[in-house]
Structure formats: C-alpha cells, structure tokens
Image 1 (cartoon, rainbow, N blue to C red):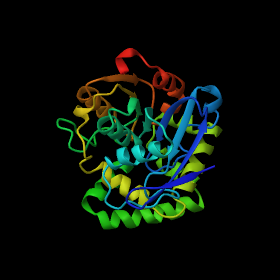
Image 2: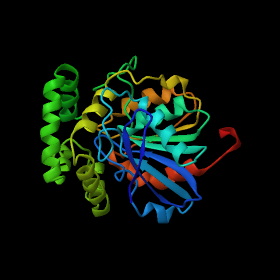
Image 3: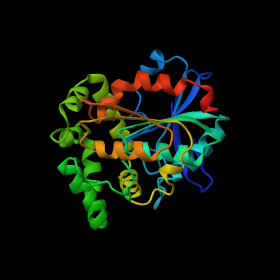
Image 4: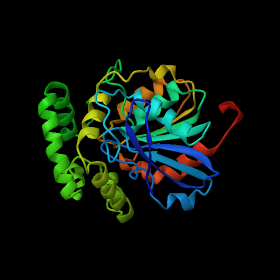
Length: 293
C-alpha cells in the first residue's frame, strides 16, 4: 500500500515499499513516463528475499505533488528526505530510462549515503560533448523531444492530450511506440507480466495530469545540476545495443565519463530488455565488496 511524506518545500511525495524489511534497501527510480510500480515486477521480491524495495512517484506523477521547474538533481534531495524518514542510512539505487539520470544524481550528490547505483537504458546529458544526442533514436522520440526544445507550449499541450488518452486506454501508449522499438523489446512487451505491470504504472502515473511527464522531459533536456564525472560511487551501466529510445551512444558516453563505471552491453537487447537482466543487476546491488566502503 502506498504511503506519503511531506517534503521540505511542502510537496507531498507518494512512495511504496515491499520485500524484506531487514534486507538491503534499494531505491527505485522509474522511467519516463512512469510510476512507482513500473520498474520491478512484484514477483521480484520472492526471487530476491534479501532486498527491501523502496519506490516513489517523482514529482508530478501519480499522487506526488508537482515540482515545476525541477532539475534532475532534485531526485537526490527527494531520495535523501525519503530515506531519512524511513531511518535508512546507506542504500543502493536502481534507475531505468528517464530514471537513470535521476539515479546518477543520487550517486553524484549523496556519496556518503549511496553504496552502489545501477542504471539501465539511461540517457546521457544533453550537453554531452562529442555525442550526437539524437543519433539512433526512434523518429517518434526525436520528434517529441525536439518539440520540447523548440515549442515547449505546444509540447505541453500534446503531452496533456496523450496523458488523457492513456488514462482511458494505457495500452495505446505501448501501441504508439511499438513501431519504433527493436524486436527484442516487442518480445519483452508481449510478456503478460511485463505489459500488465507497465499498463498499471502508466494508468496510475498519469491519472491526474501530465505534469510529471512534462517536467521529466524538460529536466532531462536541461542541465542536470551535476557532472557525471564527479560520481565517486560504483555504477553499473546496463544497456541494450538495439535500444531505440536511449541509443547506445548514450551508454558509451556515460561509460567513458563515469570514473567507476562497470559497463554491460547486451548486443541483442533493447530498452525494455533490462527487465530480463534484473536478477543479475539486483545481485550486484546487494554485493558489498570492501572497495565499495
């Protein structure tokens, strides 16, 4: 069941936790768009009994209040406040897609609290020197993000209309992006457990407005508020080479600029293939070599 806390700036943040209350705390940062239930399938708690999963709706999604104008770095402050409220000292972080940069913010800005971070299918910063940011990205995603940069008002209106349609029929969102996905992603999305989880997440995340989706998009396309090169914690970078939403060039850039990055590239994987890699990723997050102290 979801719970909530009041943030220092007065916002309400909705979160949920499950799994082993005495296990390794792993804070989950969902994709864009998405919600607290859209990253780890419920059965993962049974498969990983030593993990305490903690997930929250980023500002503007689900039942969490909006944080207009937020940067990616805001995630570190929100995660710090949330884990303080839960009396958790040190923890691991897992972020997927649009949640990846937010997870990296935690690694960069909370080095004394974060043990390890895993990011799957993450984007690179928009100011990534030497990276053609849109190369390899699906045409629909390029069009959407380009509009966010050049026509923000029209972009906001389009997202509001899409969110309203998703609230009525969340399956249409998956259908709308399916053509631009890899064969690997289509196979993963055909799995009932995965599609059911994502559809439930989209419905709840966009149930009130499109503000979370809008603010996420603008934050990802703006300066993140930290430099990935300042990250001192161990970071597992998992990516599918066939990803058309977060192209492989983003993975390569991050792998070259995060000092303690451990890059893992699945040559046949896509954006949603990360769900199949979760067992190995969670095992890595739970491990505590002396070098991570």
